[in-house]
Image (tube, rainbow, N blue to C red):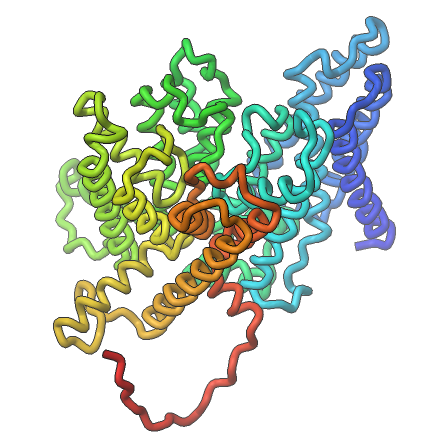
Length: 584
C-alpha cells in the first residue's frame, strides 16, 4: 500500500467518523429549518465522493473482498442514490424543496450514508490482534462501550419529549443492550421517534453482540481474519472450530435478519386494524424486540393493551420469535443441518430408490438437552400458570384463551419480559414460579439471559446421578465432562451470591418496597427478563444503579467476567492426594 493510499484511508476514516458525528448533531438537536438547505449538501458530498472512492478505489481491497453479491448490491444502491441526488437537487435549486420533504428518499439516502460511514470507520479501527486482553473481558468491554454510547445518544434533546438525566439514560441503554426490558420511562410516551430508533439499535446490537457485527465487517472488508482474531471471535460465538468462526457469524446475522423480517411481516398482518398499531415501525420494533428477548414495546401499555392481549395471532408470532431467539444460534444451526440431511435422505430413498447406510448425522447431545429442557420448562410454566391463575387473572376468559395466556406467560417469563396483564395481580405462588423461570432463563449462545437451560439441566442430572450412585453424569451413552459440571456449579453459586447481594443492597436503598417486590426486580434484572411488580419507575437513584449492575452482570455473566479479570493459573504437572469432605 502506497503512502498516498495510507493517508487517504486515514482521511476517509476521519471523514466517515465526522459524518456520523454530524448526523448525530443534525438529528439530535433542534435547528433552524432554513439551515437544512446547507446540511443536505454535506451528506450528498460524502455519499458521492468520499464513500465511493474510499470503498471502491483500493484495488488491493477489492482483490480480497468477499461476497461478490455485496459489491453488486452496493453499486445498485449507489446508482439509485445518484438518481435521488438528481431529483432532489432539482427540487432544491429550482423549487426550494429540501431532501427531507421526500421522506422515503431522505431516509433511504441517510441510511446508506450511515452504512458506508460505519463500514469505512470499522475497517480501519478493528484490529483484534493488537488487543492483548482476554476474550471475555473484550466481550464485556464492548458491552460497556455500547452502553455508554447509547446513554449519550438517548440524552440528545430530540431523543426524548421532555429530556432525560444521565442515570435514566444509562438505565434505559443498559436495559436495551442487555436485552432486559426494564424501563424507568415509558418507551412510547417519553421517547421520540428518534429515541425509539436508538433503543431499537441498542437492542439489536446487544442481542446479537457488537463483536459479531464488527467481526463480520472486518472479515468482509479486510479479506479475511487473522488467527488471533478468529481465536477471540471463537470464544465469543462458541464456534466448535477456529476455521468455522466466520461461517458461524455469517449464519448468525443471516438467520437474525431473515427471522426478524418474516416476524415483522406476520406481525404487520396480524395486528388489529382498529388498534392503530398496524404500521411497519410497530411491526419491526416488536419483531426485533421479541427475537432479541428484549421486552421493549412502543405501545403505551405494551402487550397488556386490550387489543393486543386479545390478538391470538400477534401473541403466537411474539412467542415463536421469543423461543427462536432464546434457543441459541447453535441449536438452530444443528436442527437445520439435521433436518436438511434427513430430507435429502428421504428424497434419495423414496424418489431415486437409493439404498443408503443407516443415518449417522443426528443433532448433538447439547441440542437434545437444550430442546428437552426448554420444552419441559415451557410445559411446566404453562400448566402451573393455568392452575394457579385460572380463578384469578384468567377468570372470565374462554378456556382456549386461558391456555394461550398461560403459555404466553410461560414463554415470556424465562427471557423476554412481555406481559399481557398487570403482574401485581399475580398470586404469590405464581410469583414463585416466575422467579424460578426467570432464574433459569434462555439457552447458551442465545439472545436471552439467566443461568441458562444447560446449567439447570446439568444440576438436575447431577442430583439424579448422585441419588442413583453413579460417579458420572451419563446422557445417551455419553459422559458429561468434569469441566462442564464444574463450570455449571460455579455459575449457579456465583449467580445465587450475586442475586443475594443485589437484593440486600436494594433492601437498604429502597425500603418502601416489600422483599417480594425487591426479589422479583433483582431476579428479573439478573435474568435479563424485564418483568416488574411496578417497582422500576419508582426506584431511587441508588436503586437504579444497583439494577443497572444487576442487568449488566446477568447479561455478560459474572463467571465470564471473572475469567477475564483473574489470570489463569499455570497447569501443574503433578497430582495431589485427594481428601473427602463431609458435605451432608
